[in-house]
Length: 126
Image 1: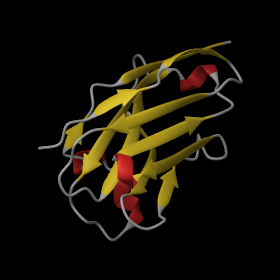
Image 2: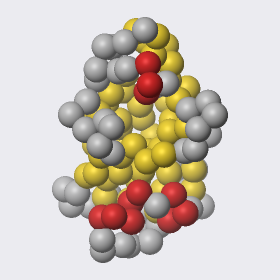
Image 3: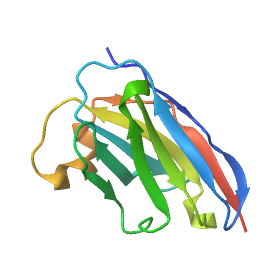
């Protein structure tokens, strides 16, 4: 059974940077995703990365500012967040998809992710 732990959240001024990490013991993992939920809003896709190969995906709202990467040896996925904006304020969750899916569009579908972390708060002040 997968166990996930997110870390790296905190309070930062607009324009600043944070790096989130998602680590833990897993079984067979095909995709690791990051999602976020702001107060009063629905949870939304941020980024995802395949556990093998070079495929990474980012939401349009974070492209050019956020970068997802992985360290297979450490079983850790990172989300480097630069140029943070107040609208990036949210609880950030990592999640695991244990099913191999051919089409990249499926990485954005929350229901495909079987395991979720507890979330880490990111607050960006203006």
